[in-house]
Amino acid sequence: MTCFSARNSRRLITATLALLSIPYSLTSFADEDDAFNILAGAGVRYEDNLFRVDDGAALGNASKHDWVYTTNAGIKFDKVYSLQHVQLEATVTDNKYQENDFLDWTGFNYRAAWLWSITPRLTGTLV
Image 1 (spheres, rainbow, N blue to C red):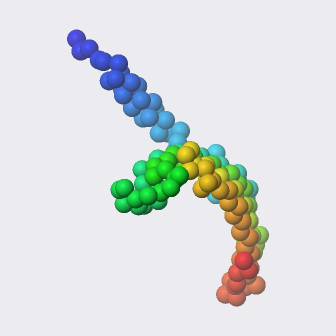
Image 2 (image 1 turned 135 degrees about the vertical axis):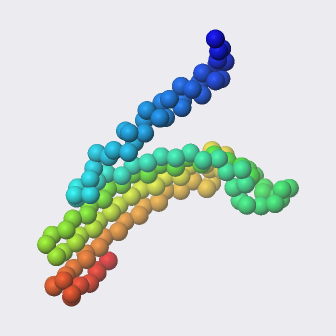
Image 3 (image 1 turned 90 degrees about the horizontal axis):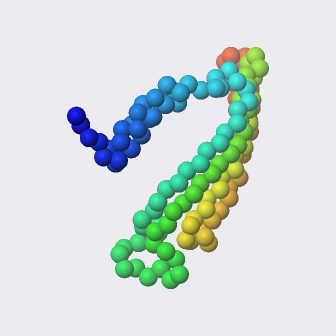
């Protein structure tokens, strides 16, 4: 009889859940024929040398290492009408730093394009 420690049990449970979630992560609820989509995401990362400076460099009140929390949300519209193709996209990205809050920023990105066509050989793009 094999005895598992609590640490090994957690690893086994985590690996099992990860393997069971693969089929669900590969399926999507939107397909390429959907004209309108909602985008959302979040991330956390640790930067051990945020300013890319040598060890011992003076940084004033800034911390050399920090946690960065990123969130984003947006919308996307992509539709083909006969020979015309319309694309619209708008996203908001928010970055927050745990210790170096003077680096916090929010970015707004947007893009619009009309890929026009009079004939299959006479085309252009208006962005």
